[in-house]
Length: 81
Image (cartoon, rainbow, N blue to C red; front, side, top):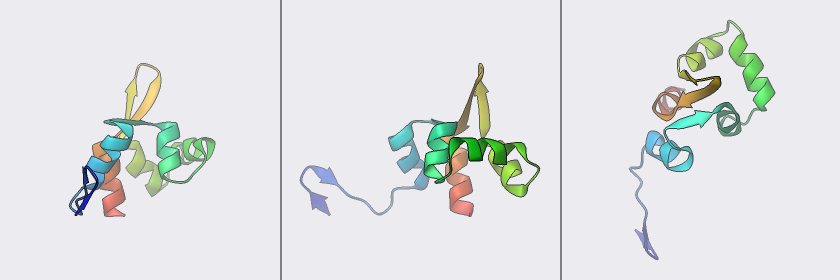
């Protein structure tokens, strides 16, 4: 389908959509927005011992003192949900 100059494709992956919107790394605030949680609520959930915390902490990367989540890992977790 064409709409103006934009070509729409139904075969865009979750990872491609995330990278286009956020780049290769999502901040905690961006991830909380994506998951429809408050940043503080997500931060607290990630500190716990739950299955949710274990899965999402595996996607966590530290760059200096900042915490980011790889878009590819986030996409995999979303698609597996």
